Image (cartoon, rainbow, N blue to C red; front, side, top):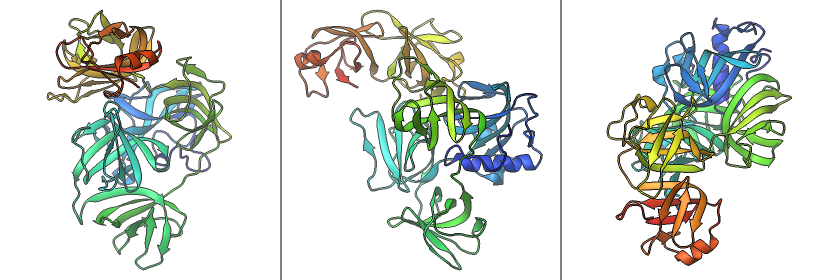
Length: 491
């Protein structure tokens, strides 16, 4: 089946523009063509997910050869000019690739990236911090952005330094039409009025027919002038979903002078073969009825990994299957959000090809960390090696790791090298000794009279009275004597 038959396909709000541009490439003679002959009896499929590595391009555990691929980055004006150097680890991309009997052959035909939003972090409500300090939220053009200390990749800024009035580019997974879990954040500049370049999407409201035309998106005034490029068949009108690029003129109230306005469509093609889609579950009813950014999913017959996973809203997953009658019928579903988080040093002599070990200054052994094609590596230390991977991970490097515990080991989704900091161990409690010790992943941390429980709101007796094997608990250790928990709390 030709995935570009009929009308443009749009898996996600942002991804519609990707597919339109890809279709335009096809019309101009792209290697993808307009038929299903590129892979013999196979055809073409699409993979949507965050980039985890380069060399080839790694998306959703698939390794795609990009030697003959055409890239489109941040709009059709870059068609034929963009390439791998325009992408970064953590960006959410769409890859159109060859398939054979429903399996990706590893050859990418087109690679497309477009950010979710670009603009200033709002002064009101500003930046809020989660109770455990590992997440922050802020607004950009009435879009609520969540960044995570481990999950989010930062360029030009950091989790600790990002600030109100920073102009940032956001890529990530939509949780709702107005909320995004950021996988990638790039700092552009400090807000300059007027003059900073911005980008947003939304539905036209309160359209005033010009010339020049003006309208609103979520209360933000969009102005046009004689230089505005308007790519909207039939002209601007209320109810159309558009992407706006332009210059911010004023803030509070916000107004933007548009340099380009493009029509986007929220329609989905009803039948698409060979789809790999990564995102966040929303509108969960049961395993046969939920959404990933508006795409209906039926995973009732899917092989779910891990088998013990409980699906629900907010869980990051990858699904594979075909879209039939508007619903993605999943053959496989893999949870990509780890409940285990570790922050400590790499054990000397432990780094191999696909695994390494972490050491804690506590009682008992080390933790084995396994990596695969879906593991994302990022160096946020003072060294800041752009090519950081397991091949240049060193003995005693200080790292943050997030992943899933499987049979006493951890399959890492993210590995970040950082400068030395406090030790952290978050995971499922294997065992504990009442008011004496807690064991997670075979690492036993002692507690003493200086240990704080639930931000010092509980006594040790109350905490241990509530604690059960299987609970998710975080331990922090940074003060002498090392090996004794400074802070312990439920997650």
